[in-house]
Image 1: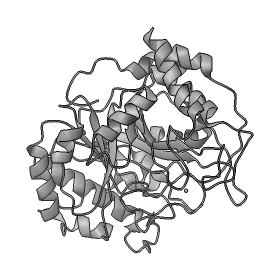
Image 2: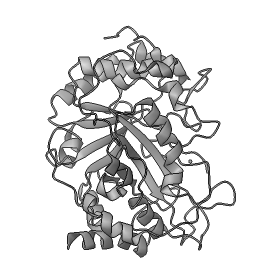
Image 3: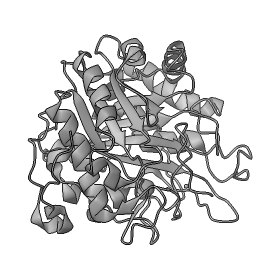
Length: 381
């Protein structure tokens, strides 16, 4: 996954334990999955200037865009092995987490690991326009390269065309200098959840969003950022194309904004079980949330690994923004997620551990926490 060999994670040894714990769930479809990000992006209410590259992504069927060579960090053909199609999630993925306050106090991430009984192979957190990384925060959290870092990068009050025109190259040069001085890989997701209709930077056909632009302008902006930083020597930055799992009519189809596999190292997805709500929500399983958009992304780049960059579930035992739902269990939802056998290209799952629009935390109920800890204890015997 990055610039070192990692010993097998505890999470991968939990499969047999979690398969035996999995419970069937009642499933109903829904349409929302986004959350408001700590970096300031808005939630779905109830979810040196270089010449522009050629644009084969205008026709997604034309294949990967020409351009700088893609990073060698990409995994070879995820999901081609028969065993990968049938193994439970916990036997084949690394787990990570976002925990509020962890960037200033890494002990909060350690607390999450102790509560979950699971190593955090990935630390996920949020940066905005003007932030320069990697820096001291990354040094603290990377555990000398033993842990991957996943950075959400809000590109600020800018339009796509500004990036392509080189108006922000001086800022990119600061990031390149920081990256060259940093000894490990860093996974970066620019314009996170860009396809969401709640985003001021959603690419649209007309480009009418305040901080957005057209589909083509987005593709060119993405390529410029990646190309500029690679040419400046920041080859330890790995690029995560990260839409939300939503695919309803008002969202942007990912095939329209795909920059090309030469400019992407990881396919990312965000999605949440918002729970049953009188207005718009439904209780949804892990597979129901992610499957459609997963299929869309893998069709664009079959050889790239998939990361779930944000995932969590409502706590149905309490009114946490959606009403109490006595028909469902977050502990059962978590067990079912960890025992999930689909999406063979999936290699990493990052839990969003904050009480926010819902109580997304793993510690929202004793049963949810116990679902992780019990499996870890059984696997350790």
